[in-house]
Length: 260
Length: 360
Image (tube, rainbow over all chains, first blue to last red; front, side, top):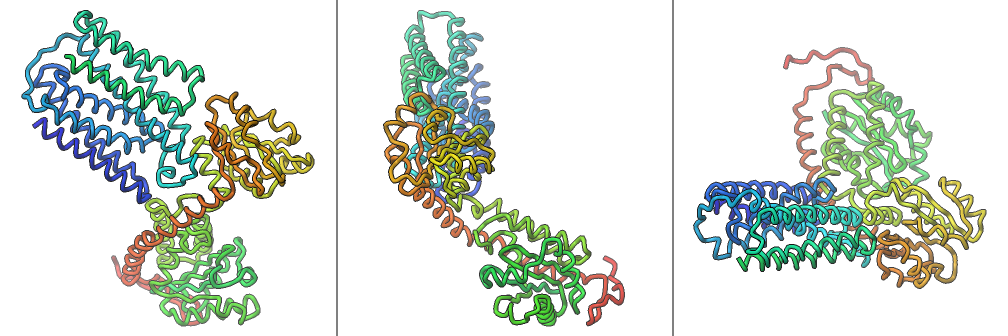
């Protein structure tokens, strides 16, 4: 039953993305509205899946790579709902849905996806807290990456005098730069909390590699934000760096999980 | 009951004819009431804007009303031949469709403009307050306002800038978001620059500086816009505080050079600069567009954007027409079955009796 929910949810994100692209090309009015509704539906199904899976495994469903990726995509959509409508950036959904679709499809193609979920009682508050909060932080960095891509597209359109569909519908670069900074900051704060929770969880020696990698990612985003707040980095630099940093962070996440 | 419309517009009459038939805004209600006194006219509304003068009536005798309308209009201007060939008579579905198109901006000189809706609303309100309308025209005009709203919300007919000024405003909003904190400077004192600056000010842009080789000219222009005049050789002193720089000098060479601007941009970390070059020969070296945070648009680039928007609006016409057609059919159907007005008029235009309507 839970897998059915997830499959339908994946289709929702694909539909949302395909429709938005078509609507943007055709300069349709308010393409973001349909995308918003279908993402809301997809999010509800994702939540349903995580709830059912959580009951089966007896803890926050982060017991294998498949579950981790589903949780990551869920946190990405959650953050979109928090950030998107607030900052007049509902079109962010158009760019978020393909990323969510890719993550979900990849997750479902993994060997761990076909394994029957095992009952693994909770390892305690701190380890669960560490894993969940860190993943939501990665979700924020993913959203920053999406906003960065949008910024770069909009900036290029303005520079090259292309008053095309994208320029008509994309948010102002000032708004995108503001949102990017806020999402990066939120991600950094969450990652810090995740790290603190990780230290509280104990057993540092067993997860040494993971901790080192996590600290590296934390430092990378910390330096990025520092350069931003001291005005050494322009919005364009930040946009590029949020794309590069997320790619690096995702790779490290992969390595950490793979090693376990 | 049928709806008739007799009207002229920028498509059928030159301005010297239109101005003769124009009705003052303060006279719209009284003129509608005069129209209602004509034989067989049961309800009337008069619309008069700079691009059109139109007389709408609800009647059981369309042909008779159209000819008496023509006579009345001819008498009013004292020259019956003046409007010949300019006034277009319409009745039935055609006149309903015409009104819906007018309120939606499809008949306007600038396709999709929205000012017309307010003008039609005022004209209808004047007729209503003077007792010139009743059941049928009330319903028709209310429906027309709804159609206009639907067209505006569900199509792209009002979207995109259609002039260089509005293109500049739209681009500024794509760069800065809201313009409340934007500061503008005009180099030179060209008329197009003044219009562009005014368009930006109307969208919330704050301070304005005018710098011209002739200080007095700069002063006059700045005063008209509530801005500040500065000497031409001092404009760079204000640069750190600028967001939008408009060039419209008559200089034979570029006044903003790449090297100079690059050195000035170093001190403004992450504050974009929107350069609008309205001068020919151009005031900005084109290569400055490559500087980080600088967005340069010359007159041709702005014109191209406006033309693209116009083309997009034209493409939207079919979509709008389809939407309007549905409402025309619905309204026409209602009109055929709607009960008559509760008064009876003679051929001479006098109300002689209250009509007894069947209980509903």
